[in-house]
Structures are given as C-alpha cells and as structure tokens.
Image 1: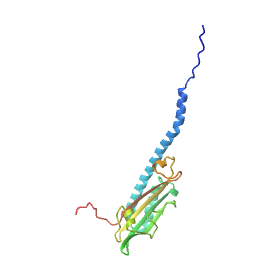
Image 2: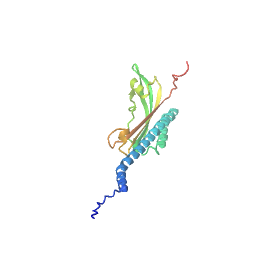
Image 3: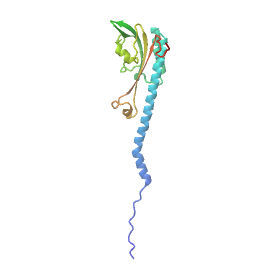
Length: 201
C-alpha cells in the first residue's frame, strides 16, 4: 500500500511577524510622541513669555524714571535666563511711548527703550526710538485704543526663537524646514488711569 509523501507545511512565526510590524511602526510612533512633547514645550514657553511681558509692563509702569527702566530690563532678563536660554535666542524690549499732537493728529512717539538679549534678528514690532505711530497703527497695537495728548504707555515685548526637535512643527506652526519657531508676546500698560467703559454713570 502506497501511503504517499506528506508535503511539509511552512511554519509561520508569529514572533517574527510582530518584530517586523514593530520595526515598521516604531519610528512613526516615536515621531508622534516627540511631536507632542515639542508642541507642549512650545506652549509652555509661550505661556511663560506672556506672563513675563505682563509682569514686566506692571513693574515698568510703577518705575517711572529712565534710569529705572534699565533695572526693570535687568530683572526681566534674570527671570528669563533659566527658561528662555540662551541669550542669543531671546530679546526683551521695554519701550516708553508718549502721545503728541503733530498737525491735527495725535501720534505716539517712542521716547525711550531698553533691550536685553543678543538675538539681533528679533526687532521690535513698534519701530525705532523716535519713530511715530499714527492713529491706525495705535488702534492695531493697543487693541482699538488710541493715546490722548501727553498720555504715556509702557510696552514690554518678549521675543524668542525655539528650535523644533521634530519636523511635525509644520502641522502646528507652518514654515519652512529647519526654521525656528518664533514666539512673540507684548503687554502694554497705560500710565494714566482710564475710566472703565463698564463704570456706572
């Protein structure tokens, strides 16, 4: 009686298949995790810059002398050093603007400014010292407010360049590959108390 030959069946290894799947998916998973960490750190830095600019405007508004503006910028720089390091990637700018009547229009002149940080490619968005802001520019910079004659305002700008650790920055921030994420925060403090629009008549 001819029993014939049994053809051996190939043995599939589930363990080997799992390793191959892991090897294919692990880089994408790691990239996603690092992208979330990157986003979280940038949001933390943005929140820190916002708090720093607000506290800086509050502090500068209480210190009215020109010499004290240098002390204010030194205090803000000391606060920023541990978080917004190194100095070559940050700039903190404290400006004092004063409204003046020029012709028939009230314009804000940048009278004084102090800066810290070594980032030369992060300029102030308010222009140079001695520059004038017209009515439309004032409204866009001060949330619809304009300065009245002889009124003063303190402006604190915090600028920082953060390098992304993953290319997923394009999903959240856009820009070209290898570009820094630029963070910007500004706070203004009017030196003259204004009546609240919600105050009773």
